[in-house]
Length: 125
Image 1 (cartoon, helix red, strand yellow):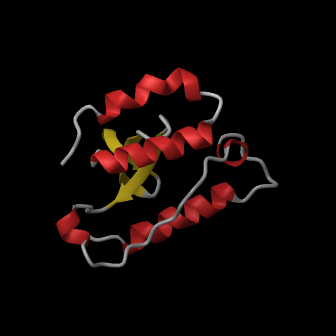
Image 2: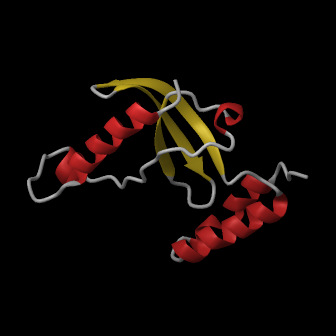
């Protein structure tokens, strides 16, 4: 059963734990799991048109750390349609030097572009 106050309870000790971020995240994770509360929540979703086709850009809030995580999805993504199927994915870290400033000593941008191209080719219709 989900504890509706689990998220609210997380903020009760925010001030006391701000100097211990890793411990704080682990503590939040444990409390949320015990309460049956979600660890992440979809905050926003919007179409994103790129040179590699039309994607869906999603932003998730992470209740354990207070951070935001993003995800790009190409094609259909309902649980029913992808359940049991092998999906192509790429975990990508943000790389400002390559992606924003086009640094020549980093291959993150090229790797991301190649991954987006491959995912588009193999995604469900």
